[in-house]
Structures are given as structure tokens and as C-alpha cells.
Length: 557
Image 1 (tube, one colour):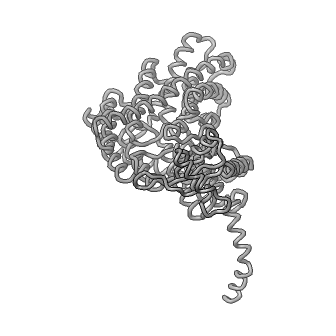
Image 2 (cartoon, one colour):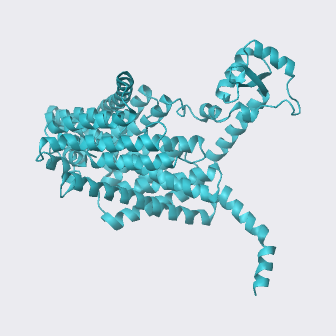
Image 3 (cartoon, helix red, strand yellow):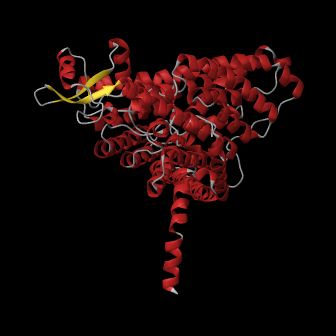
């Protein structure tokens, strides 16, 4: 029997090999890949739910609150030194973890997942990712003013990277796996399967290729099921109803609200970047060790929380108060201002967490302020002012994330009200149109631009940075190699490329010098350039064109 089995396996090994290649290279079109997407969706959804439970457990342990959903109300009853010291202690622990487990003391989040999808074949860092998850957990549990969705997205991306490496899949399949994991994580976080799937396509993969849609939807549905098994089929927020006639009469107000929210989103993003630059400059000037930076930020947060405890943690309690109209105009305005300050301190201090939940809270508060004013000026033409809070919630979040479609759908899924969805669509369209012109498309893409990773302009820009000249050049012994004497003359003139340079550097040099090739050198210990080969202009253009063609094929398949 075993001999017959070996014989059948030997005869069918070609078919088995073809099946393995299909899974690696054309997986999204195969039923096997959908099964993998389902398992990955279950795993990513479990990660999202587990991370939320872990935050709630540690937060209730540290602060002693019986209900973490009412954390800021409970914090008002605590001694002031508790509120001051808890974030500072959390910052010390975060700093130590980052110092020992990351090369640059930086927490990984959604921007790194977008970078992994674009230029790393759908993979993200593992060790730094684990450190970032721990840091975000501690930050959010000890009063850090950020959100849990960003860390969850990165943790799901680590799971997909592990699966991609285990199966040894190519870049297209790796990116599809990444999209599946992210979709499940987002849908499990918000109980919003449609928005989760579109978030993965719109923000992470940044295309809507048909081949990726089915497995991503399967994973997103799986993530939603995990959420509902744990928390039930409930929504985070509820909105009072409105009347049809009044709603349509006030549509122009939502256009104006969108512009206001776009400006608020830009202020929030620039405040975070300004805080990061300021804290970096102060750290270098005072020569503080990197591990103390989160501790200082935590101390500042604690001092602010003594007077404004609503800034502590994710902030869903304050968001709910805004969406249900239980805040006065001046309260909403002051809370919005200090929430932006708190988010800037937390993220500038490299403490961990995401920006989505803070954007929802700031948006809800902004919309509530606008709603109080608008309904006060035109009461006979206005519906419930809480509708403005919900529209503002979506408008600021969409502008920050650069995700108008998925953010609109998140809000629509949370309410199930088409009139509400229309109000959010109008506000979101205006806010994203304005904000995208004042920053580099979104918070995440601007983050990457600050690290010299240029993704906002599209593949025609970032693909150039993926090719090092060392991998494209012709070596002296290769066929058609450049004349060594000519290369040496060009080196003497200072016209050469280093081995680690990319086509992003090389192509402008070709345009400026109008030569057919450029010498490629390695610098010796004393700085003398040693010839390694030559990069031909035609070879560089061919490599670039092949990459563009492959990207176009993936995005339109």
C-alpha cells in the first residue's frame, strides 16, 4: 500500500508543484487562498478583540475603575498625584522597551503597514512590531491620549507577514494577505465589515483591484463575527433622529462644516508633527537619553489630566457625550483644544497608539460646537444638533486618515441611517478635499514623507527608491560592460554613483549629465572610490518600466 502511495505521489508531483505555484503566485483567484483569508481573518479579529480586552484589564487594574468606559469620570475622583504619576510611570516602561527592542526608539503603526504594502512585498518588521504592541498597550492603559486601532492594524500586519513568509509567497499575494489581516482587524474593532474591507483597499493597498476584493471581504466578515461573538451585535454610538424636511434644508451647513473640519484636521496633524520636532530638538539640546522621552511626555500628560481628565485614554466616553449632545458649547470647544494638545504630547513623546480614535473624538467635539452655533442661529431650519457632531466625527477622521470612503461607511454602519450617511458624505468630501491640499494627502503619508518615503505621488515616484544601482549595474566582467578607463576619468571628475544609491538618485544624474552610463563605486576606508561597475541609462529605464508594468498589472487585475 505504501509503495502504491509513493508511486502516486511521484506521478502527481508535477501537479502538486503547479498547485503550490498557484497558491504562491495566483492565490487570490483560488479557493485555497480564500480559506487562508478566512483563517487569517479569524486570527486578526481575535488579535483586535484580545488587544481591547488587554487594555481594559490593565487600565482597570492601574486606575482601579470598575468600568473603563467611564474612565475619565472615575479619574476625577482619584487623588491628583495618581493622575499625575500613572502616565509618567507608563512612559518610563515604554521608553525602556523601545530602547532595548527598536533601533530608532520609534513605535510602529499604520504608516509602517502602508510602507510594507508599497515597497516591502506586504511585510512589516517583527521585533520592532512586538515592542510597539507592548508600548501601545501600556500607553493606552496608563492614560496615553491615543487610539487602539493603529496598533491593532500593525499587529494584524505582523500576523499576515508571518503567514506570507511561511508560505513564501510573492509580493502580490503578500499584499493581499496584508489587506485581509487589516480588514479583519478594523472590522473587529468597529463591528463594521464593509468599512473594514474598504479601509484595507483604500488606505493600506491604495488600490481596488478585483482580485483582492473577495478574500479581503471574507477576512473582514470573519473579523466582524469574532467581534459579535464577544460583544454582541451592538454599536459604539447612538444618534438621535432628525426630520427629513429640516435635514435637506440644512445641507449647505454640512458643506461649511466639512471645510471647518478639514482645517481642524490639518491643525491636529501639524500639531502632532510640530510636537515631534520640538521634543526631538529639546531632547538633543538637553542630551536626554531616548528612553526618557516617553516618561517626560507621560508626566506632561498627567499634569494636563489633573485639570482635564477627559484626555485620558481612547476617549470614547467623551465622544459619546458629544454625539448624544450632553456637552455644552464651551465644554466641547475646550475639550477639543486640550485633546489635540494631549494627542500631540503623546505621539510626539513616542509613547505609542494610533490617531484614529482621537480624530473621532476631536471631530465629534468640533461638530458639536458647529451644531450648537448653527442650530442657535437658524432653529427653524435645523434638525438635532447632534447630527453635526456625527458628521464632524467622520469629517475630521476621514481627513486625518485620508480615507473618505471607508470612514463614511464606518459612520453609516454605526447608525444605519441614510440621511445621516448623506450628511457625513458631504462633510467628508469637503474636509478631505481641503486637508489633502494642505498636507501630503493624509497623516500617514505625511509621516512617511518626513522619513523620505514618498508614496503620496504614486508608484512612479516610490518605485525608483526600491532599486539600488548595485542590483542593476553591469560589472566589469559582464557582457557589454563599460570601458574601465572611461569610468576612471568620470570618477576623477566626480561623476559617479555609490553602490547603495537608488534609481531615485541615478535618473536625475543621467538627465543632468546626458551620459549613457555612470560608474558605480564603493568607498574604501580612506574615502577613495573603488570602481565596482557601471549603471547604464537604458538598464535603469528598463528596470523602472518593468516595475511600473507589474504595479499596473496588479492594480488592474
